[in-house]
View 1 (cartoon, rainbow, N blue to C red):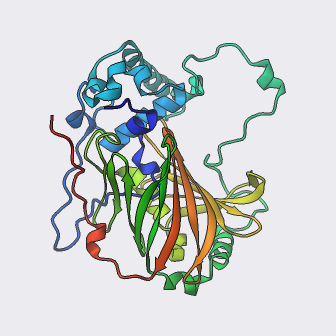
View 2 (tube, rainbow, N blue to C red):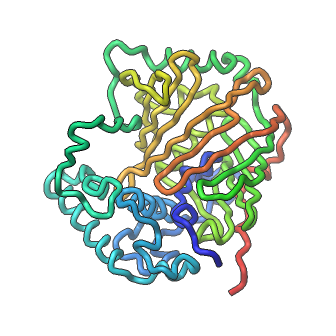
Length: 384
C-alpha cells in the first residue's frame, strides 16, 4: 500500500462540498439510524479524546496538523503511512500532544471559566515550535488578513441581512425560478489537492437538500450521500480508516447549509441571528459578509459579491474539544440551469485538505430514485 498524504488520513469529512450529514431524527415507518460509534470504540490507544464521534475525532487530527504545520507521520510512526493499524502506536510527539491538550484545558479552566480561548493554534500558528521572539518583519510588515469567519455583530451603516439575501436570490434568477428548480443530475470531475489528475464524478441533487456524489477515483469509488434520513461516506481504504463514515453534531448543520446553495429558496430560514459585518474584500472584489448561527450553535459566514450579489464564499466552523474546525467553500463559474444561476465549480478547503468539484453537464428537473439518497453500502476492503 502506498504511503498516505495528510489529505488521505486527516480528511475532515464535513469539509467535503458534496455534503454528507446525519439526521438523528427517526422517519415514520423507518428503523432508527444505527448508533454512531465513538472514537475509542473504533480506534485503539485513544487516551484523551474519548467520547467523541469518529468524524469529530478525525477533525481534531486536522486541527493539530493545521496548528503545528505537521503531517500524519510526523506525529505517528513512519510505518503508519501504509497501515492504518500503526496509527495506534505511541510516539514521542503523540505523548507530548496529550500533555499539551491537558495543559491547554487547564489554562482555559483556570483562567477563562472553561471557555475555549487558548488552543494549540494560539501559540503554534502553523509551526511545530512556538516562536518566543517577536518578529521584526511582521511588526513593520503588512499584517495578515482577519479570518472572514470570525464571529461579529451587525456593523453600523450596513444593510440588513434580508436585503443582502434578497439581492442574492434575485441575482440567481428570482424567487419563482429558484423555487421551480427541484432536482438535477450532473456529470463532472473531482480533484483532491494531492491528486495527479481529476476523477470523473456523478452528481445527483434534489430539493430541498438531498445530494449524492459518486467519485470514480483510482483506488475505487467514493460515495458521498446526503439524504432525508442520514448521511454517509463510503470510501476505499486508501481514503478513510473506516469503510462507512457518518457526520454528526455542528458539522451536520454546516453541511446542511452547504446543500442549500443549490436550492436556496429557503436560505433565510437556514440560520438564525443573521447579521452583516463590516465591508471586506475577497480576492480583488468587495463583498458583503452575512453571518448566522446553526441550530446546534455553529457559526457560518456567507460572502456575497457587492456588485453582482452572487455568493462567492461560505466559511463555517464547528466546535471541537481542541478548537474550531473550519471549512471554507469558494464558488465560481455561475451558469444558468432552468433559469437559475448555479455555481458549476466550487473548492472546499478545510484544516487538512482541499478539493475542487466541477460540473460539466447538468440535466435539470429530472426524476431521481429515492434510493440514490439512501445509506450506501460500506466500501469494500481487501481481505487481510
